[in-house]
Image (cartoon, rainbow, N blue to C red; front, side, top):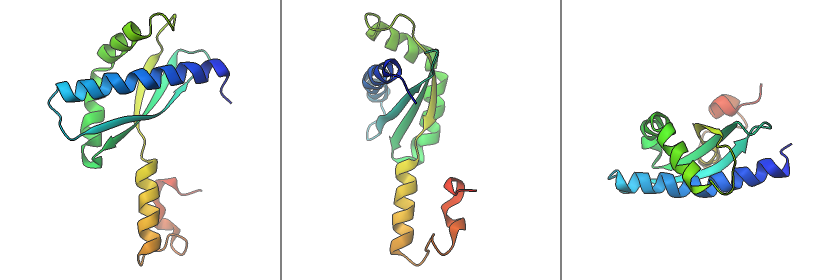
Length: 130
């Protein structure tokens, strides 16, 4: 369970990361790409922040995530400048793609169509309980 401090730092990082990433995408000439930060989990010692991104369209997610990961030091510096009066130390950032919306959409499509994941659990893939 997250402490109140972890939740506050996560929400501050989430709010500022949206601005930083969206500005970088528009300045980089990527029109029609929507990047949203769905969740930020901060570790107990406040040294690592796991950032979950929802990227639309989905086919550009992997390519965009690689670009974001390669520019992590620049993103971290920009974030530190924005939060210097709120945070003493900037946590290290780890970026992941949040595919929960894609997963929910896949289940809805399967339930509407012939493929029923209740009858054939193999259709659910990696989110399947073991």
